[in-house]
Image (cartoon, rainbow, N blue to C red; front, side):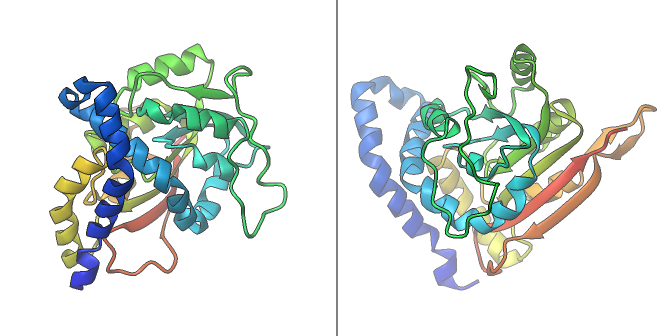
Length: 287
């Protein structure tokens, strides 16, 4: 791997510090106890980073998102929703409810604004009848922002879904599974217990590269990167974990979790890339 590519993250870290250091220091000034709460401090830093870079990040992922997210149907659970950019790609005619799993509560206000039809981006190549004002809101039950839980809190998720009389038909993850705790266990539990039989898991994730030299640098940078970016890991083979996921049939035998699976890459992405992406559409078995 070329040295310039392996050290590219340094400029990303500098940019993040440049935009997020002052807001984070201001938050500490007003609430000094933040220094004793590293998880909340990390989320404060990440919220400032995402306020600056969520738009450009969405722009860079747009071609992949345009092929993936419009396949969402029914009630959609957005794991790690960020600022809710996924809404912009929904087919409103078939996505009936938007369920937000975003543990960073500092992002919830931005999600509400977007879900209610604000902050719509400009599409240089508009798709007729696909992108319309979202109109998801809590008052009519089409928007549910899950409270006080992350991807690992399955029982809390199920309780809040039941309270809203919602069941998850599509599970969506856009560059989120890189940061959830105990990823193999929690991804599997989410799919097994929360996603309806026959439901879809749609994901766009940066994952561990198959190239040994790139993977070495991903592992090298991950301890620092996860500290700065709220647990984000560069070295998770998330796509392989999902593909290998198993369930039990009615007789107690192990079977594949999936009745259908599609996995592809990000078009035009070079192999020497620390953020190597995989895009997937997996359909949960209905037996």
